[in-house]
Length: 334
Ligand SMILES: Nc1ncnc2c1ncn2[C@@H]1O[C@H](COP(=O)(O)OP(=O)(O)OP(=O)(O)O)[C@@H](O)[C@H]1O
Image (cartoon, rainbow, N blue to C red; front, top):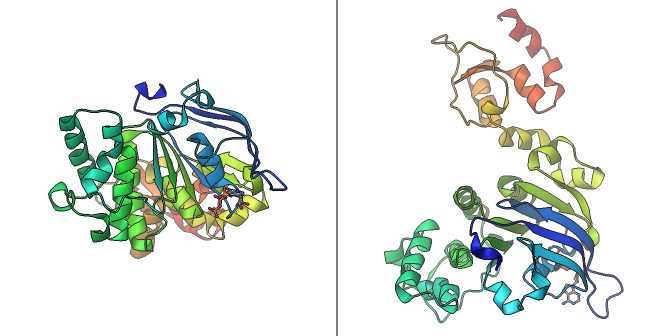
């Protein structure tokens, strides 16, 4: 099956359509999408636009009316649905942990189904609990009701990863948590995905979450018609139309600043040794670099590769801040 390579495989959707019986129109209508191997693609769109239906067709919890789904080149509509689902990780907002099983038993479910030897299952459970920051000694034998909502969602993610599937489907997996826990889970998950490079489809209502996690974002309109499919930076820089712009909201520039780092902007050299400029490290976001400039009352800061100016920072995010009076100030001491 397509999971010979746990590091992620390509997913192709061709003419994918679902018309629920008795409904006047299809819930998902003729979706064509390529999801590159090892990328995390976020489906974002309003309630009822067909995100969940599209995703559930991929693991055949919903049978397509027509169209094709290929995973790693393999036509999944020819596979047995139960067999297919054992090879695709699935994490949902409701978590769906079995209340009568311990945390360890919940995570072990799929590897056991796949017939892994007991010692391998035990090792894997320990490894996964550590991976999602739940100390195995403390959490392995607890029951789901003895965990917080955020901890339960981590167990859900650990369980989805258990058999090391190349594909993960995640439907608002952090949706039921408060904003702080949610941000924490997002950043932990982003780090995890950097290591694992699975092919992931992630559904959310939340555009901020899409920007934080997505290698690419598919902005969907009704019936899963694709309004735009691109990287977060490209969507923020050039929304395809008013519909996509509406999703981004007012503060697209701040979002782009948070997404780009000082390494993305050509610095003017040479690196000053000790000239009193505030310094930022490699990898610092442009938003943090701007905060540093503001805090020091400076229109520039030193980076490991040179000097980053306010003007260059504005140019990088495509605003006309470069045309403000800062340009003259900056030019005066160049
Ligand atoms: N089993 C079903 N039978 C009939 N209609 C359905 C069924 N499941 C979903 N629908 C309809 O299909 C459309 C798409 O639903 P879907 O759950 O895929 O949307 P969604 O974008 O995931 O929504 P949400 O963000 O609210 O979860 C909706 O109009 C919904 O009412």
